[in-house]
Image (cartoon, rainbow, N blue to C red):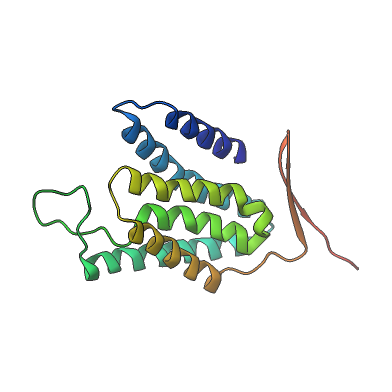
Length: 179
């Protein structure tokens, strides 16, 4: 799954080299995909564990953050930067950023920062894509990231005695127990 993230980030970097009318749309589409890929990667890692403790913690943190984000949208009623006509106001905080940072922060808290670097890059790209495509203000994406980080740090425990590594064959999750 980290290969997918790397490929998506590489493709997005190539887009910056070209100044085409569809650049903003492509950036937004990659961000839309990564908002799902990063949490799916986190869920995939936790499903490799014995039992469902990690998966339930991830679900609780993700659902709590998304419910809070939707509630804050209703309370703050901030207008999106691209919304010219009408009175639709649901910009703050960003749900896309909240979703992506839920996955990245979960990996950080559960398995350590080293394993979360690529997911954090993917989540950061999601936030960037929302601002670049004029769907959110910077404060919106930071708000979404902070809400998801808060719930992750509250609900998620570090996985005991684990190491996570990646090689050309895939991702390896190891568990050590001394007797």
